Amino acid sequence: MKKILKLLLILLLLSSCNYQIKSDVDTIKDTIESFYNTQYDSYLEMKYKDITPYLDMSKIQNRNKVIALKTLAIRRKYIDEKGYGYVEKRRFPLTFNYKSIDIKNDYAKVILEINLDKQQAYPPFISSGENVFELKKYNNNWKIISHSYSGLKVFEVLIDKKLPELDLKTIQKQVDNEFK
Figure 1: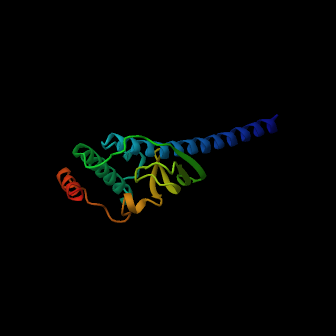
Figure 2: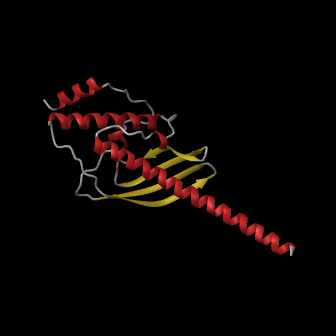
Figure 3: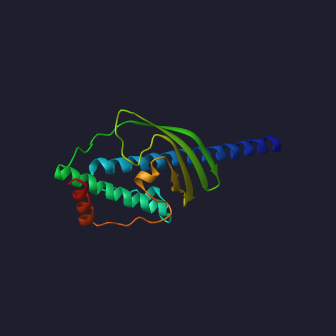
């Protein structure tokens, strides 16, 4: 009887460990996909939407993501208002293909391949192909600590030096100069 109880206890513990890993995988996927969806919403609505819940804001790259998204939203809205050019307002499909999710304690590395419709123009923060994320778990929440992708230099520009935060008038003046 004791052996059966021990066996049941071991099986129960193993299944709960498997559940925790599955739960972490689902939470990590949700974090990454919510991060993309929130950025895309901000892009289409031409108004900054808060992406900080998905990011470890102690990282320079992540602070630059926020600055770049704010700047992009302001630029798009101003270009649209001034009629300087066509501003895309449609959302195009993207497919997330998770190649691997390696979790070690409170750290995860995710290799994600994003497939896009090559005939469409996507926002600069979405890059086709391999995207590598590193995440860390803080108080049961997974936060992105780094993101490596082919469009990084186009959107965030820098990962080791903080971008300047430009005010509305400065951004508008830059746009005016670009379209003269």
